[in-house]
Length: 112
Length: 110
Image (cartoon, rainbow over all chains, first blue to last red; front, side, top):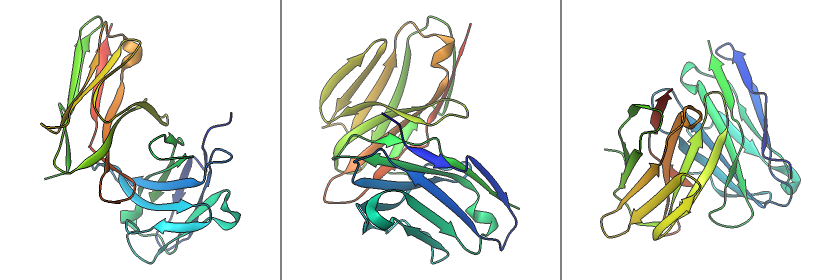
């Protein structure tokens, strides 16, 4: 089966611009998670979708971040406007049930 | 202090050595995960534990719930084991997502 796909793999944008990250989970996985690792820190939870509904978005840093999962398939994470501190690696993971996560390769975002 | 602490942060060893990476956590958990990330690669799930011990090939993971501690062991280490090993916990009480340690950067030299 295809794994969790994220794109782009890398993105370099200027401060103030908008970037949209995409995650395609494993087909049939209702649960989709976004995580982020900023340099030197541990990976942090951002939010969790169950199908198209946001189950928990307590980890979203601020209202410059908007996540969607229309139709309960792929998800997008938009950062608008991007700030320097948004730089990091954004990971997506999906699971069918609790505990069994499959991670994507991540999107490395650099804001300059 | 992080809720999930790993040690060591960095580890360099010679091929063939027995490797131990430790993880301690300070919160109630429903499960603990060991993950692996190769340079430039995605994150791969190695183990999910809620008690006892699991083995897969040369990898062994143990957990002591009372002591809130887990270890990941690699026997007969090989340069291809070089990666970042990450401990992450699923917190109890309905909290969502995984809580991660900072990872252990392992280098196995030939």
